[in-house]
Amino acid sequence: MHVVLLGPPGAGKGTQAKLIEREWHVPHISTGDLLRAAVAERTALGMKAKAFMDRGELVPDDVVVRLLEGRIQAIDCRTGFLLDGFPRTVPQADVLDAMLSSQRRHIDHVISLEVDREELVRRLSGRRMCSACGNICHITLDPPAAPGVCDHCGGRLVQRADDNEDTVRARLRVYEEATAPLHDYYRARGLLRCVDGSGTVEQVLARVHLALDGRR
Ligand code: AMP
Image (cartoon, rainbow, N blue to C red; front, side):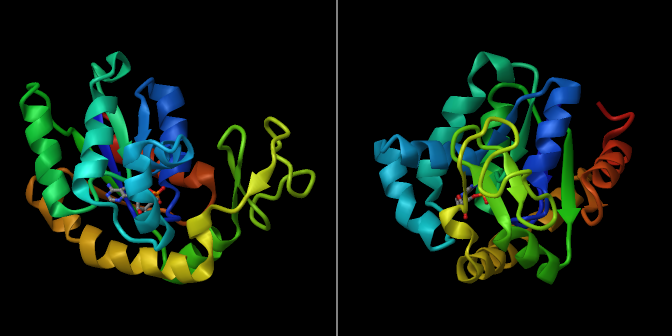
C-alpha cells in the first residue's frame, strides 16, 4: 500500500501516520523528519537545507529528492509506505510518479487532512517535540504530566525552530501556493480523498479509516 498524506503543517499528518504505521505495518516516511535528521547530523544535504527550513521555505527539490530516494529503496519500503510531507509541489509529484513507475509501483491513495487556518496556527505554536525520542505533544491541547518533560521517555521538550508564529504563517502561505495545487493533480487521477482533520486524534483516525477502508 503506497499512501500520500497531504495537508497543511499542523493538520496532524505525523500523528495519523504514526497510528496507521502501527496498525497496518507500512513505514511512515516524513521528509521533514529526514531533513531534520540531516541537519542534526550536519551532513552536506542537511547544511544545504537548514536556512530554507528556518525561514519556513521549501528546500530545493534536489536535496529532498535525494533523501527520499535513499529512504524508499530501503527494504522495509518494499511493499509500500506512507509519505508525509512529500510531494509538496507538482514537480515533486511528477518525480515521485517516475521513481515509482520505474519500479513498477504506483500511489494507491492520497488522503488530504483539512483543518481551518487559525486552528493550525494555534496547534503549531503550542506544539512541542521531545529532543530525545521525537514524540509530539501540545502545551494546552495535550499537555505533558510535567512541564517541559516528555511523557514517553523523560527527554526534554523543545519547540521546533520553525514553529514560531511568523514562520508558521510563512509555512502556511507556502502550502497554499505550492502544495494546494496537488489536490487537482491527484483528484484528476481519482486518488484524492479529503478528510476533516478537526476534532480528537481518534475521531480523525476513524475518518481516515473510512477513507482508506476496502482500498488496501
Ligand atoms: P514538515 O516537518 O513536513 O513540516 O517540514 C518541515 C520543513 O522541511 C518544511 O517547512 C520545509 O522547509 C522542509 N520540507 C519538508 N518536506 C519538504 C519537501 N517535500 N519539499 C521541500 N521542503 C520540504
